[in-house]
Length: 76
Image 1 (cartoon, rainbow, N blue to C red):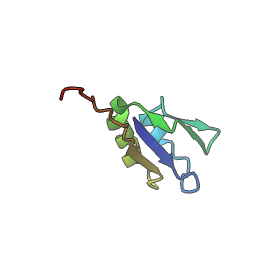
Image 2: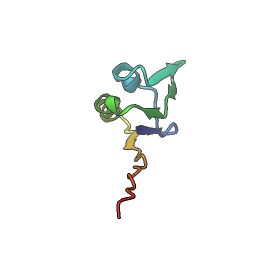
Image 3: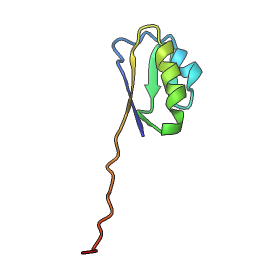
Image 4: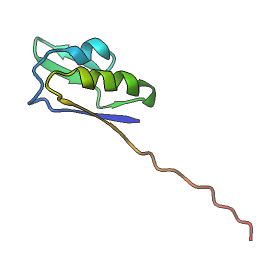
């Protein structure tokens, strides 16, 4: 799972992210950005491109660690 955070105070509505990853980012009006805060790991490369293309660097892409369940053995 990949977590996204967008600093909406910094975002200027250039829409580069919406162009590169339209399934995650959409523009609402001329300057309002809507986005899905969590995405599949398979979209990481596309999200990294969208974040890098942001002229004001308002997008942070971060991995979310999922807890791993270790198998417990009853062998003694």
